[in-house]
Length: 512
Ligand code: GLN
Image (cartoon, rainbow, N blue to C red; front, side, top):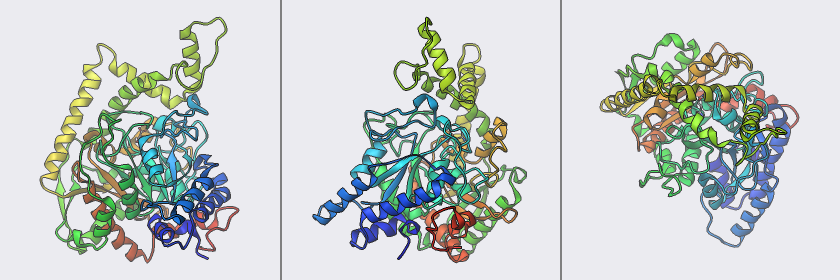
């Protein structure tokens, strides 16, 4: 029998709608996979104990002839930054341990309404601060390709769950790269939508002007299917765009024909120094561009002189917004309270925040508070906002010449656990190519471009498009995916050694 966990969401949905499998069977297969491998991977912080009941209800309604959505019955993993009424939402922090939300995040509510089956909540760096998931208060997630390596961050749990076939689909959030960089290091697909394209309501805020929720999947089509479910205007989010979005699944299907590559103008940034990139990452990037060129794409060198200041500006804007967003964890309204006998309210607040927040969170709160303080506001926060405007102008000028911009999705492949965790600056530099999109609000996609020759680990290529042009990314992403998967003779994840050998369950049926 086919191993249901190896199928894409699109294939599962088709089998479900034809009645060839039930949602209970599909959900059970994924729960068994989680039971078999998640002790090693630790992608999940919480597994939904009601998943099979939800699946059974969907099967019953399908049997009764109810009209169900295109992904009905397909399981979905949910990053723990998204609040849920039936499972705890911790955002990877001790301060929210066991916290139950009185409402669902809009993306969660829409997924439930579309009859996806919530499988559980995935691990992440505390409050989405990080690039390795090592800042989770609940221990790191491991990369399914090599258990000694990081799965990326902050959404390492969602990416690892999808890469390890524990879930066909996952939700992530991307403030500076937390969907795209984990996709890069795990050989999966991740999309940061246009700012305002997907609701942030119920996404525990990190930096509100940068945060965006999006899909984490194994194929571009699956991402499009999920984006169609979660996207669109939400009156609960004041930054949500009132825009009529096209179907992203349709865009992905159209893109798979490859037509879009003929005459496509692909911008490559002159100022991105090759020196900062691992040789195998650069080589994979150039090979993907050459493959596109062979199909009629035109590679155009563009200038984006301010991109190199993106990381610096981001690490002022983000801590500034985060320090203000995290002020709500005050020991009174949410989560943890550390009592101080005989102490004042301030004493309780200080003791709670001291015990509840990890080092990286404290570091950023201090940085942000400093950057916003009177006397430094203009010098730091004000300057960073000016850089943000310059980066937006770089994008506007670039997109006057090209249809998409391409970069490697991150400078290196998955590094070893522990390698950068004590070196914040090295950790921050992971997001050099992803951060500009958040600063400018434009959409970005990362798809696998191959394996780095020196370590055999996955590499991603990122495409960026103008705001509102998410569908273009689905077309281009699906075209390049098809081209590369054909050249490899099958999906990249089929070559992940650790997956085939993962401990107990031989759920892969000897895929090695
Ligand atoms: N790695 C980046 C950071 O630490 C991005 C985080 C994110 O996108 N949530 O801030």
